[in-house]
Structures are given as structure tokens and as C-alpha cells.
Length: 363
Image 1 (cartoon, helix red, strand yellow):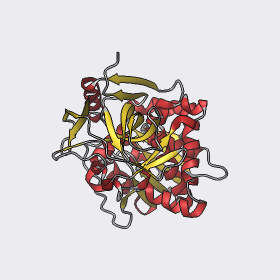
Image 2 (cartoon, helix red, strand yellow; image 1 turned 180 degrees about the vertical axis):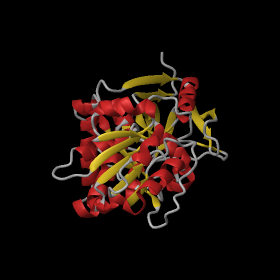
Image 3 (cartoon, helix red, strand yellow; image 1 turned 45 degrees about the vertical axis):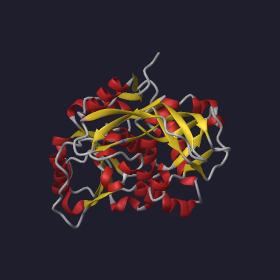
Image 4 (cartoon, one colour; image 1 turned 135 degrees about the horizontal axis):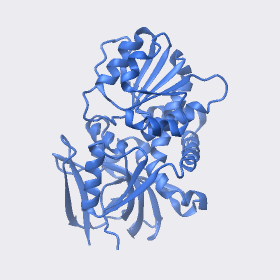
């Protein structure tokens, strides 16, 4: 048996290669997982873009100039030297784009464990936690693809919404969402639109080709194209949450709203090949949203595990609401997955299409 891995060039991650290696010997306490399927979204492109800054290259390290982009997916235990984890268990969590992976379960409970590998101890804990799915409800088991494709993104949407609510929207009367056609973007719009009581206006920004899709979702008070930024009401106090990472868009928003821009939050980079943000207004910095920090705050406010329980509940609701809206395309085999990744990097995957992948060729 061999392990196949899809690696991307760190400084030009449209380029990929597939490597193979013998299945590693397990040390005491290790388990070997066969990776069944994983999601590939624009979020994974963001992982590659911020791999050095956040540490995404460190989860499944390989020799530079190559790297392994982490993904969310399902895998089955096919060998175990950990008495608490049995062969045949199905696991959900942070995985490499590969056919197999070795984990070292630690802090094991009936429903979860943490990968205790030495190189992962300093990395954000949320990515080191794995779910044991044998006790999942039938409803949750029916959402396997959505759990990979949407739950991580919608959980980020929830944390963003909670961050804005927790800070009274920084005084904004409008939340302007860049790349509202992205899953994290329209997830945030969905949550904002459902807030009880007085809420800020939700304005989605997107490209002309995606306007109809965002409007169909019905989660924004208005949907505007990027070239319409200069026509928005500059007197409206605005909180800007950007998934696109396009420097021209960020600059245009900062220039338009000036002192009425109350906060500018960077989340992703769906426009990864655009120029990086460079707003000149130092009074309103364009700052990166680090989800684990909000998780840590709410762990203290609400108790251990509660924030992610709420996030997962909302992710499940939104995933059910999207049934029939998004088409899921399944890619099998290293060549097909590499081609799908190239299309994703080239921004050629429509917003109403989602990709589930497996390096194993379908038989």
C-alpha cells in the first residue's frame, strides 16, 4: 500500500504535483486513516495564501518549495496502535489532500480526540480536534458532504457574526460583505439577516456574474457589484467584512466611507491573485479576523465547547436550507482532483457548485 499526496507549490499554488510514499509504520499510540473524501473550496485557497502567516503549511509538513493544503473531510481507521480507537471508526476533521494520514489521538473522549503529534501542539487547537462519528444522529450522517463543504465555512460565518454582535457592530448601521457569493460570505449575510430586534442593513458585494445567485439566496437587503461602491451612501456608518482580499476593492471601500467606516475586517482571499489590500487610512486598519481568538473569548464567556456547539447548529440549519441550491460535483483520482484544484485557483468554479474530492479512483 502507498500513500498518495497532492502537493502545491507554496509561492505559486496553481502548480501541483502528486507524490507517493510507502505506508508508514505506526508507533505506539498512532492510527492510520484512509481518507475517503474531502471538500475543496475557496477557503482552501485562502489556507494556501496565508500558509506562512497562520501556519497552515505546518499541519502536514513536506519539504519546501512544496506544501500540503489542509482540507475538511472524512476518513476511516484502517490500522490502530491506539487501544481506544478501533479499526473501522469513521473520523471527521482537518486532513491533508492525500489518500492516507497518520494521527496520534490524545485527550480521547467518546465523541472526539485531539491529534497529539509534537509538530501540531503549538497550532490552533480548533484544527487539531477530530470527531468520532459513530454516535452521530441519522440527520447529521445525511449531511456528510455538507459537513465537509459548509460546516467549517459557516462556523466561521457564525464566529464573524458573533464578533460583530459582541462589539455592537463597532457602531455600524450597515454591514458591507465583500465576496457575498462565497460560502463564508453568504453564511454571514444569512446570520445577520436573522438577528432579532434592530439590526444593521446587510449589503452584499459581488461580481456582475454572481449577482443573480446572491439575490436568489435572499439573505441581503441589497446586492451591489464592486464597481457600484462609488455610488453607495457614504454617510452610512459601515462595518466592512471582506472575503475577497482584493486590494482595489478594499481601497475603494475605505475611500468611499472615510470616517464612516467603523471597522474593516479581512477574512479570506477569494480574489487571491488580485493586489493585496493597502488602505491609506491608518485610523481604520484592514485587520485579519483570527477565528480561534473569538472561540477562546467565548469559551471563557459561555463555557467550554458552547460556542462551537452553537456554530455547528447554525451550520447544519444553513446547510439544510441550501439543499437544491448548490450542485455538488465529486472528483475521484489524483488527476481529476489536481485539475479541480487548478480550476478553483483560477476562480473558474461557479458559486453554486461545490467540489467533493478523493485521491482514490472510483471503482
